[in-house]
Amino acid sequence: MNREEKYLRQRFGSETPFQVPEDYFSNFSAKMMEQLPETTARTVTLHTSRWRKWRPYVAAASVCAVIFGAGLFYSNHFAEPAPVYSAAKATAVESNIDQAADYVMIDNEDIYSYLADY
Image 1: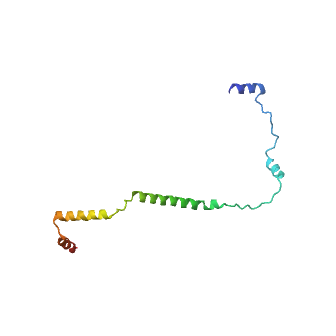
Image 2: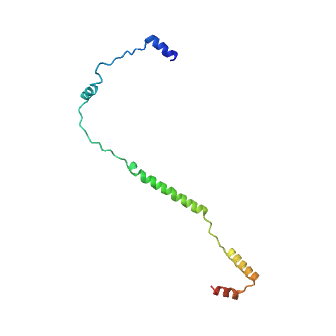
Image 3: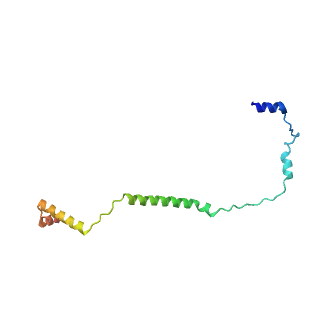
């Protein structure tokens, strides 16, 4: 005990000044029920809001949208860009093929004969 509690106990004592009448709690519930007014039972219908009804569907749709968006992002992010051919690149490719054919000493007849085998 601390000093304040000791002081209060010395000054006022440790007795409880309140007393409960005899048999107070034995018929307490009966007396309380007598004092309550008579009411009739009524049915209560709970109105559910539209938001509560649609909330699971909205959540599922948002999850699907996020997954779809992430798929689009990653498919576009990691896809290789399509090659862009221009007239200058086409002539460069043709000249490279001509240079390669000259290097291996193949003429058009040899190329046609190789292609005819397939």
